[in-house]
Length: 353
Ligand code: NAI
Ligand code: MG
Image (tube, rainbow, N blue to C red; front, side, top):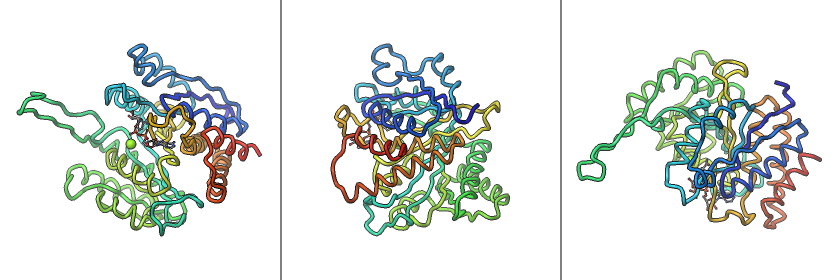
């Protein structure tokens, strides 16, 4: 692959997904790379029109891109679970996005709900396992709707799956100035899975003597995210804990309009296990504000920066992040409510200029 020529699949999705993705693409264009994009109309509208969520041919085509940019999918008119399971989770599982990467970073100028928090206190990255745990779909139901109903939902943790995400987290930690990794779990109650996670972290830590390792129960971690966020640098955790903890992370770092994420397949390009990674804002389709130009596109633009970084374009990623940082500082002084497009235009101008 020519590193300056990106073949990008775009799934704008539903609601504000379409609005914010348009701004993300504008910023990406301004970076000055050769960009070929193909748009896929997956989501609620497609489901209503054809009954399809993710046709096999589409999935096969998606495998051929360098990366995927997703807005958000979902609408109250679609039965719960359909798009989550058959589209989003299927993409993560099929493309083996075993790392769900979510930075929690308070930019200067952003108002945080924790009054005492300074930008230097909130700068961590959560590495959430993306393909196993309670989200693997193991379980079942018997006697549904009767008083004797039995529902099980098992958490699957494989030595292979845990080790690869833990290794990724150690690599991340080793590359950051603080070099600290915290395992978050609930080892005192979820003893079987917790024991596996703990042993893997301990074993892999021997290969990273420069990284300090720490452990925190998930309930305590929820408290410390708010009271002592400076405890955390890289956090590695399972699928469910990571899902919940990163919404909390979004809240402490200035809100859902700023929270970016990557569903990452870290395999080497060209290797057999490689598949395109997918970048998306943490938020959903926000039906309550869709179509009104009120959505903040910043989370999507920061997701675009993560996409560039993932493709080895660290300089371009830094330019986008810097443009966002400058825009955020501006929001503090010049309070004006800008539309989705205006925010996108302003950040695009900073990237271009
Ligand atoms: P949501 O994230 O769409 O909205 C929650 C609240 O945050 C709403 O009040 C919304 O207006 C606000 N909000 C979200 N993004 C914003 C932005 N960029 N700027 C300003 N305000 C923003 O979550 P909700 O309401 O629980 O879900 C709505 C739909 O989105 C559902 O169908 C859900 O399944 C889907 N969803 C999809 C996701 C995805 O595609 N990865 C993730 C989360 C939800
Ligand atoms: Mg979530």
